[in-house]
Length: 462
Ligand code: ADP
Image 1 (cartoon, rainbow, N blue to C red):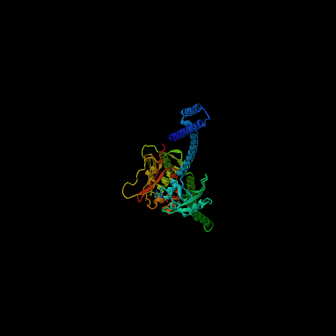
Image 2: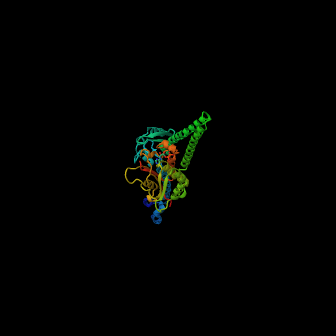
Image 3: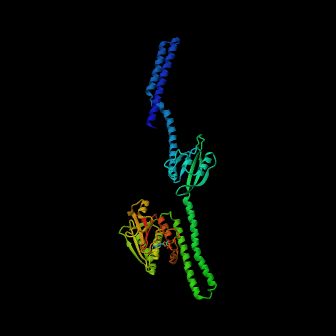
């Protein structure tokens, strides 16, 4: 118990005791005087009895301290304080939970006034303080306020969907439930809990778009194969030359479908694991050289010249899923050979820190994706702790408007060109998802007639 409270109790007890003492002295003196006047006792006996009573009181007063008198009161207060402290700790915990909750939460009193709004709620409504304000003026969603009023009037909990106005429209769902204050206080409060459904809805839309475009991509080669089968059965039945030609086309269409299915499966596999941090320790420099070696027949067939440089002697180990990073580098190298001029000249560089700036002179280059500085800031490390692999070609480059869309599924600058070179339009989307899983950054820089540079930044594994 607090020291000054204990002293106060002791002093109060001492004052009460002093007053009791004076009363006792006064009353007993009065009784003695009455006995004497009535002649009921001898004055010496009365005086002696009174003096003995006084001495007994003085002894009790002298030797029992204020603490003894105060002890029972102190015990009662201490018990009460312990109960209140436990209640306070519980309230603090509830308050703390509401504070760290990433979802907005409001508590309204019986009149619809905001009693509490957690930081996520303040962030959502763009206010620094909402306590004491009317809920209708805080959240501009009449449907939510109406539901809160119903709940405050004693109706069942409600759940309503609403959109927030503003530059970026958000779809949310509010759950409104009554809070019974208990303890004889019969005025209800309402809890308003809000979930942002924008990302969920966007994902649903993306999934629907994806299924639509994937089936569209498969439908074309499938229709072509079916068409050729019909021709082979019909008027080309007895024409070996036409048969050979059609079978070649059918084979290439079937191979395209095979590539498409393989890419779609690998994309969904990567997406499925995107939340699982990769654990293997991989040397990015060795890995890039392994990819180059495995692609050497392709380089040779395309007449491409691919050159490898290691930035400096600093370590280039990263925590990674080896197969995924292998696939990412392979996709970028494959693209550089396909789109990086005829024949392509490709430079692969691996090193520590930020990847070298590719276009330092002349006409402006365009950029999309995360720079090394952004990746480092996101990871909370210095740029020196990054490891990069950069793939540069000296081809025709990419238009500025196309750059930010390249990592979208099935986005191709030139569909005919992509199809002819066996592309599926999923290569860069796969790279992007692999980089997301590795918490790395993927950047594309390009200059028309100057070539394109892809850089992947990872955190260095100590
Ligand atoms: P695709 O299977 O069509 O190659 P990607 O997702 O790998 O699909 O690439 C998307 C598009 O980006 C390609 O169709 C191409 O137009 C463009 N692109 C990719 N890499 C390069 C590059 N190195 N130079 C120029 N354009 C490129």
